[in-house]
Length: 94
Image (cartoon, rainbow, N blue to C red; front, side, top):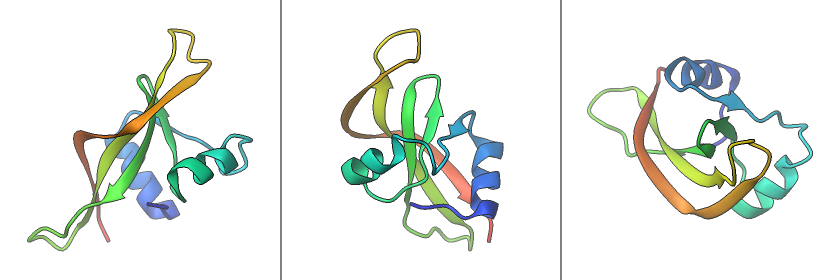
């Protein structure tokens, strides 16, 4: 899920993470591996949001999905793994 500026702000208000800037050298490779997403880095690794089915409310939501974990405590490299839902849901108010 590629987020617009408003969705990005809403996500960062609900998730303790940093956005990987689109001009970061790794983003091109990440898009090839995982598709066109807004990528987030947190204390456990690389995350994205996947669109969830609409609920009864009119708010759009996104499920946080983990794509890679840090290899070590230095946060210097990531080890990719199969996508794993974290169980966290971000509410994107439209």
